[in-house]
Structure formats: structure tokens, C-alpha cells
Amino acid sequence: MAPRKWAVVLSLLVLFCPTGPAQSRHAISTAQSEFLNKLVVAATERTHHIVRYDPAYVGIPYPGGDVPAVTGVCTDEIIRAYRAVGVDLQELVHEDMAQDIAAYPHKGQSHAVLDTSIDHRRVPNLMVFFSRKGEILQNSTRLEDYFPGDLVTWDLGGKIDHIGIVVDAKSPQSGRYLVVHNIGQGPKMEDVLFSWKITGHYRYFGPNR
Image (cartoon, rainbow, N blue to C red):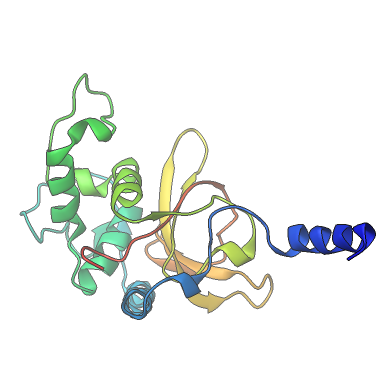
């Protein structure tokens, strides 16, 4: 093939085969896909609940503990969605922190202290857990990099962390997948994927998947 034709072929390969971590849902197994589908259904169901935003510390049982059903914050919607499909993040986060507590942040403390009532309800801890036990994906601003079941964290400004889960409904205006989250008015399904600075993007299929 003539050099000029090779140059054209190579340029097309670069254009249509971008480098970087694969974002496609096609790379996951059937079992993983089915799990994410169930997780999306559970997350969407959460939008039918009336929840008063309440960040107060509450002592709860372990494992399987939860704050009162009528209260909660952004992390509680993630925890409740996963629990609905048989995954207890309270227990899993605690077990991982107990094994390697130095890997986790500890706000306002000179050393980390385990607390099964609150550890799993903190966005930074969930970010560490999902990065250790799930898949870390790109923090991009491309629609095609996000799929139903993906977990996204944001910085709302002033180092205020937030978390939500991408679901399979799309905005008719933007074409973006909607996100189930609780930013102060209970669990809502909204077009907020790119509303704030993305700080994390994960997939977590639960243990042993």
C-alpha cells in the first residue's frame, strides 16, 4: 500500500479507536448486567419514597442497620438501593475498613476510628470502597461514558461531597441518563449528571460477581 494510503488508514484508526479505559457495558458478564439492571430498578423505586433530608448522626444496629426510613442523606439512597438487591454496604464497608483502615480518610481525627453507624454513610468512604472492590471509570463529560447502574460522586463546592446512581431513564431535552440522588429534597430522578464537578465514577456489582 502506498505511504499516503497508510497515513489515511492510521489517521482513521486514531480517530475511531480512542485510547483509555473501556467504558462499554459490553465488557461485563451476563450476571453483572442482570445485577445492574436490578440495582437500577431498586434505585428508581426509591424515588417513590418520602424522605426528609437529615444528616444527623444516628446510632444504628449492625449489620443490616438503617436510619429511620423517613430520613436520610445522599449515601442512604445508595445503601438502600444496594440492600434491596441483597448487598449490605454497611457490613462490607466496615469489613474492608477493619482490614485496611489506613486506606480510608478520617475527617477531623488524628487517627481513624471504626463506627458501624456512620462509616458507610460517608461519601469519601464509599469512594474508597468502590475503588477497591469495584471498577474505577473515567470522570469524563461524555454522555457515552455513562451507563445505568454507574455510581457518580461530585464536589458541590466547598468540598461538599455528593453521590448518586445513574438509571435507565433519559432526559428528553439533553438525552442524558437521569440520576437518582438525594440532595436535600428526598430521592429524586433528575438530569444532574454534569451539574457539578465529577470526582468519582464507579461500577460495583456486589461481592463475588
